[in-house]
Amino acid sequence: MAVGVFDSGLGGLTVLDAVAKRLPDVPFVYLGDSANAPYGVRDADDVFKLTKASVERLWDAGCDLVIMACNTASAAALRRMQEQGLPEGKRVLGVFVPLIEALTERNWGDNSPPREVAVKNVALFATPATVASRAFQRELAFRAIGVDVEAQACGGLVDAIEEGDEILAQALVRSHVEALKRKMPNPQAAILGCTHYPLMQEHFQAALGEDVKVFSQADLVAESLAYYLERHPNMQGKGEHSLFLTTGDPAVVSDKATQVLRREIIFAAA
Ligand code: DGL
Image (tube, rainbow, N blue to C red; front, side, top):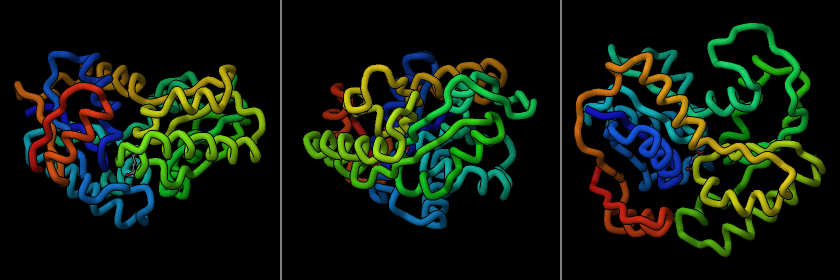
């Protein structure tokens, strides 16, 4: 057993890196559904079915706890899976929660009424499916008032990152930031609401300007997981080995992952 980390493809590796660094003694099983990536252009039912199958694969691999390191899956499938009921002893955690906690400077368990927060104008960059779900705005509205969120669906960016086409990815970041700024000229903060986007964080920061605070999920999720495992140590399982699984071609995915993270990563077939 180990802790599972799931994404549609390579983006969740940004989260895996951070959680593995924060919790070096915990084995992680990573599953990238590369055969079906990108999820961000699929409809909610499709994302739900694919996400459910992947999470079940990780449960079968012995992971009691699965981190859904994919905003698109978290937006379209997490609540629905929880409402349908999870098997005894199994848990799934999404990646929105730690981000909203950080933005609103409060804890998830804090059920007091929504209140004013320091940040007023927030730019949200995410996949078309995450933007369409409005899940981020909904969760934020439970906790904060007076925050104006302008969302930009970053079409094409996940494909460019998955393909390793850095020039195209940079051009897309610039054009999506320009499009956002036409709608909201002076955001105070920006949310990278897709786990692929931290791989382009310096380009987002450069296009937005140094005075915009850019929130990305990896470190926030790592802290949140460490806190969760402190409170629920039995969810860690007993596994000793980390593993990388893909529904795509393991050789191709290993090459791309190694190129993206700049260290050797070997995937096996899921
Ligand atoms: N990395 C995923 C996310 O956080 C989505 C990528 C995709 O479109 O498959 O939203």
